[in-house]
Image (cartoon, rainbow, N blue to C red; front, side, top):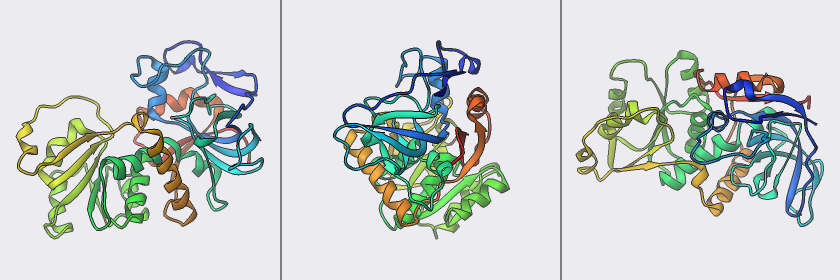
Length: 328
């Protein structure tokens, strides 16, 4: 089978298209013929070396997310069968052979059914982004129906899904973006209000949007830039969940005291197995019931995986970047 493989850490050029041996599922494992694979920033961090959560063994086929059809099931698998349309979310899998390939084998618990109304490219946009969004909102942020959530960078792969999941759960949602195109995408995803984070003092609008009720949960994609402001606008007993950060900052921790606000870190790698399963079960239900409509951004062919990993760290994302592997 065709696959993207790396033999050492390094720049994107270490990613090479090769003919690799087709993986075979064993007990409680599933093989999926992939049509699309998702591209995530941390896959570029893994490629460069020194990523805290994951160190691969070489030769290594990257990729944790994808979508396609089941083409072989191992002993003990009863929930899935050959021909099922599925998406793959294999971060917690004990075995996963990499989705930057024509076929992937991973634990059956990391493979979930994809509704006919959801395309394969949309399915590949789930995985890490949707489990990150769900964990941030509900497991870490403890978001409840009727509360108000602010999603920074809401036009990206995680942000768009966070907006949709929060609305589906009955929350009031405020999203931010830096372009008119991004703001329009957030509106289309169901946000009650959208702010341009390139405008000075843009967060001041929160008071009028919420009738001075404030924000209960903030999903933070760039903590080194926004955290101090977040603590000004969070409600008493509010929760700021940090998904992304690219630097350091200096602020007075006393800001957390008067409101007893929680600052919570989040990484999908830390999700207990039971919580990860809950996330995917909830996502499967939201897809079935129309609560989730994944947004696909840039689509590149599999052989341009190196370009994809370079762009994922520099581009202003609008939806999820995916690699096209085969015609569906």
